Length: 195
Image (cartoon, rainbow, N blue to C red; front, side):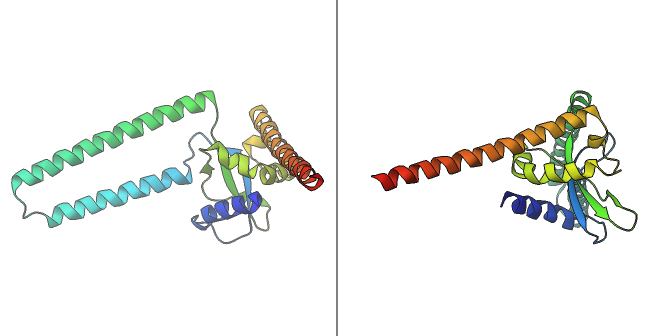
């Protein structure tokens, strides 16, 4: 069930991509240094749309008095300063993260005549819950991809090897939890029937 939820989630990501409709496979990888995630591109697009709406609104509101226009301009400047400060903070944070630990992402892979290859922008993993819920699927896929000649950084680096081991540990921990729950339920059922 968790795998289906994960596939549903990643399929919705894949539908927003601009790649053609080839078979898709989702893999675990590191973000490239200059690479932008799909979430970041969506934020940039939304900001551009908001700016164009503001410009249209400014053109249509020429009849307003000068004081109202000055106040609006001040508010826009404040928002832009806040947005710039937030963008600078995010940029600095990303620089620090890149220096310390590489960002993990889910990459959509596309198959055509040549072989599997990355398609579209990666989806940055910001919550560990995504990894926990999809560890079983991702660990199996990554085990298969390890045998291929796919140029994913996670498959060709020591840091990647460590992340794949963590992924397997999460998967194994999930299975142990399920076994313990089943054992406990069986034990409770036995105690219930014996009374």
